[in-house]
Every structure is written in structure tokens, then in C-alpha cells.
Image (tube, rainbow, N blue to C red):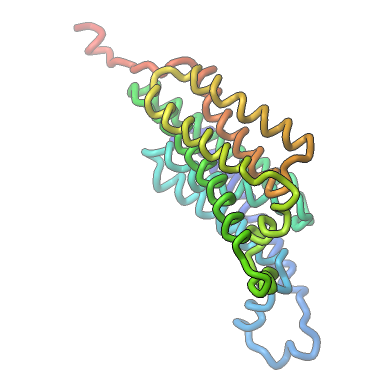
Amino acid sequence: MRYFKRFTDFCSGFACFTAIIYLFRQYMTYKLGDEEAEIGLVDKLKMFFSRQTELEHYLMLMLAVMLAVSVLASVILNKLPQLTFVFSLPPLLLSLDMIKSEYIREYPMMYPLLSSLAVIGGIYECVRMDKRDGKHRSAYAGSVVSAFASAFCFYIYKKWQTFSALTSEETENALEMRRFDYEIYNHADAMDMKLFLTFAIVFGCLAVIGVILTDIYFIDAILALPPMVALIYTWGAEKISVHPEMLVALSVAVFATRIIPTVSCKATYRKSAKKLNS
């Protein structure tokens, strides 16, 4: 693992440490009134991280956990950097969603910025290792990100179909949904949800093409550009009401994992001096 990748892992670790320190400070000043003297430490922690009453604390805890898992995955899978994107993308998406809902009070832009560095560090590590041994980690990395984006879009579309079939009695329990699902339930009527199915297919095709054309990076980059531009335009036109920041961020990540290997040129195998002299 080279220095730039170590630096990006440090950035993710620093963001995780900052989130933990913030939670610790909040917990030390957290008061429950007269009930505090009657409950134990475990019960107080449960109330502090309650999704119903303290969603901000709960989401910040989830962000810290995701950042920690991202760092651990990068260290454990240092020989397979093309797989680390499965762990580096969730904290980026969650931090953007939390900023939108104003759940990050201190240094809000730090978390998506440092999380995005982890994504960039992963693709640069793939390029570096490809140039060393001639393999195609960069192409597979782009396919992993594209597949992740496709699964994200398909999940939202299927959830919308599930919510559309709910009866009036079942909708009364909507507030008990996870926040991610509740936004789908609450804002789906304001847009054409088939858009998610369309982009699920598009990103799925990009993942397959990336696996087939492992040596022709510029084609992948060209094909990844139109979905990103289309989603940015649709977002600007306010035609996406369900997790728009997450969807656009994923399209940018797909394009970034394609354009960086293209700019870095085709991966070439560095032959040893012995082979060159033979």
C-alpha cells in the first residue's frame, strides 16, 4: 500500500475519531432529568442512541461505524483494492444525507470530503498495482462501483413498489420505518420512480461492460458520462425527490472510477530487468 492510500485511510480514520469525540462530548452533557438517577449505564446509552428520540446521535454512530469498517476493509483487503469500494461508499452517502437533513452540526463538509478521498485513494491504488503487474483492478473497481449504484437504485425502486401496495392500516406504522425507507415512502409521489429502475439498468450495463472491456478504459469513461450529466441536470431541475444527493454522488463516483484510469493511461506491466535483457 503506497503513501497516498495510507493518507486517505488516515483521513477516514480521522473522520471516525472526530465523530466519536463528538458523540462522547454530547453524551457527557446528556441529561434525562429526574429519570437519570434511576436508570443504568446501558439504558442511558440506549436512550442516547435511540432512533425515535435521538436520531442525530444514532446516525452519527452509524457514520462512525461505517468509517471504521472502511478503514479496516482497506487494510485487510490491501491486495484487493477493487473490493474496498463496497465499504468506502456507504459513509460518503450517509454523510451527504445527514448534511441535507442537518444532522451534522460540527464541520459538516469534513465528512463527505474525507470519505470521497477514500474512494479516490482506492482507485489510485488499483491503477498503481495495475501498472506494476498488468492486471485489471481498475476496470473491476469501476464495475464494483457501478454494480453498487445499480443495486442502490433497484433497492429504492423495489421499496417503492412495496410501499405502493400497503393498505391504509399498514401506512399508519410508516413512522416506525427506518429513516432511509421513510424518505422513499414520504417523497415517492413527487417524482417518477421508474427513473430509479432506468438507472439501475444503466449502471448494471456499465458494470458488465467494464468487466468485458477491461483494457479499454476510455470507453467506460465515455459511457459513464451521460448518466452523471443526466442525473445532475435532473437533480438541478428538482425532478428527484427521493435521496437525490446519494444518487448523484453515486453517478459521480462511477464516472470518477472510470476517468481516473483513463487519464492515468493504460495499465502496463513493468518487466523485470532480467526479462528485458533476455
